[in-house]
Length: 376
Image (tube, rainbow, N blue to C red; front, side, top):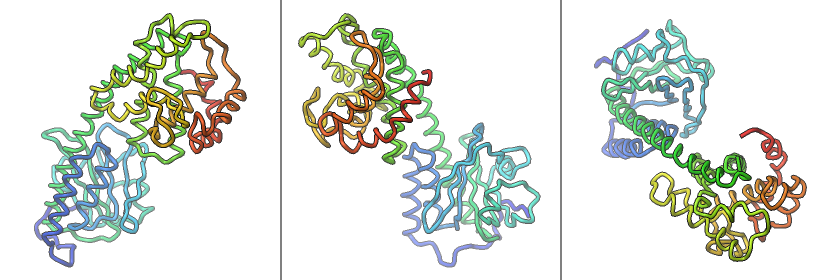
């Protein structure tokens, strides 16, 4: 049976809502608006709703995107899952019905419904759902679906609250998408700068992209957050951006650098940081750009940082930058073999490299060796 919002639907909660419930709702909706991560947005939505309506799972499906984010509540926490190739927004779906109605739509008995549901609905034993359209003005953005494991009625009050929170969620999603588009545009510009560096120094062609790929694989082994991975992506891509301010004669010198020339080269992390310091979304990347040549024993540059004074992501970048630099041809030497490079890294543990990060890198070096052979 399909029902739209009706005032006679019963209250699902056994207790009245308290001022604390309302305060929690306001706090969580504030968090929704401040979030730039879609997963975090959906989780905040779930927490915002739990005092007003039962939530066993939430899903988010955005128009034009074939992936659906599912979050199933287990022991008070939300477990994330991405459903690929989702058909939830097909013309005959309950989601499309909700969008066309423009209001929350309840299916109070899934097993007897004529709609086709995603496989996870039967897998998780959901019995009813509320599909909530996400709109920004006249723009249809997608659907948030609340799933219940019981065929439980939902009150008009709860549906009204769901609608309000969904409106906030739509604004948050739109804001997140706008920021992502801006970041993409900005990052395309700075990638062009990175390409300009490689044009000045043709021996480093593909270096920034490989360092970025290697660094992300390594950082993932430490369980860093998506935000940190994005920061690392920016920082690793731009770690040598300061070389744009270094004389090509020094960059491409076929022989050994003089002490004076090496002092010039040592200035490129500082130049790189200055290049990106006024770009808001690259602020987190500044320590990676500035500190990727610091050494664990304090003998690196430009600041002589040591141990954990060196930002973690810069320590990650340091070891992968060293690996790719040694396994690449340079004006003054041919590439080292992977085995020789690995031996150099082992010898640098505790002096040049963070021991924990370097040892983890050595565990994954066969993977990186294969990645090195891939075209960039």
